[in-house]
Image (cartoon, rainbow, N blue to C red):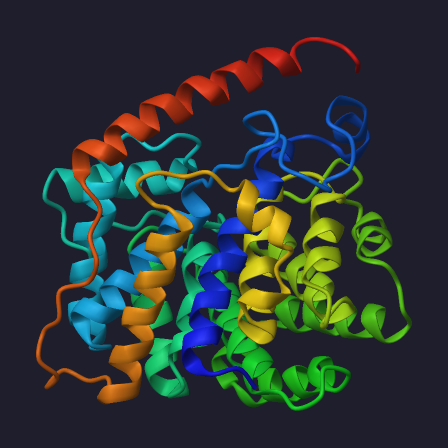
Amino acid sequence: MNSPVDAIAGCLWGTAVGDALGLPYEGLSRRRAAKLLGPPTRYRFLGSRGMISDDTEHACLVAQSLIASQGDAGRFANDLGYRLRRWFLTLPAGLGLATVKACLKLCVGVSPSSSGVFSAGNGPLMRCVILGVAVRDRDLLRQLVKASTHLTHTDPKAELSAAALALCSRMTIEATSEEELPSAFLTAFMEQEHLSEDHELRLIIGRVVQSVAIGQSTLDFAISQGWTRGVSGYVYHTLPIVLHAAWSHPRDYAKAVQSVIECGGDTDTTAALVGGILGARLGPAAIPQEWLDGLKEWPQSLEWIRQLGEQLAEVLSTQQLGPSSPPIRPKQLPFAGLLARNLGFLAIVICHVIRRLLPPY
């Protein structure tokens, strides 16, 4: 098992690289993506360079709030609500409708306990992998996942999926055998009463475990589920494809990330989630160096992300999480810098939208 520093840094870097690699493919079917962009072997967002989206930003916001709140669920929710509001005001592009509505409510003074809207979109999944990697106590993990989810999404399916993915992330970095992880997760899942009571989710997890056991590829699994035009942003579609890819390629970061991108659909999120899980398991060294070198971001650079991860790991190693811990100021990013970056990012996104209107079809 990796050290806490490597696990957290690997999670955040793995999230960022997967996010950047999958971003230009977002919303495309696998056939259109293959014709328009080619295979996901390199970045294709800004020439041969990559940029991150809200998936990585949310993971970093959670890391900041964990540091600031010291793991107290109430303080965590309030701090994350503040950071989501500030982040939203920097005009990030490509947000889900539920996240937009929740952030608007936060901006007009609605409390974090009431800001969520009824939706089962992917927002909570974007924030739960780093929670699973950072927090060992499973009762505390469940509280933090609930607090993070309800800030934006109140559909029970969103919380259940986020809790399951956080549990998977925790078990992945603790596992001694990759081959036994799917069955071990299924056992742990069934022991969690709040998860196993959902019949639909039990069936979903069971299908993934069975598919991995017979060696079915992630793409074939997606096709067998009827997702021929891509994996949607619905949590009960995203969760199984992420689990399948992570369990099918437990020692190969690149193949796992590429396998979900090849399925099409919400590729930046699925690749970011798989990348975060395997980055935590395998460490930063498992991420291809050319992908690290090609990720060009400012002010949220890989170096800044690494420093944030080191700060979180230091907090976790020097004191117990809890409400009695003294407050710590996490690493910050300049508001004006983020606003300028996001305006430039939006211009690039618009260029991609226009390009998609043109052949080949």
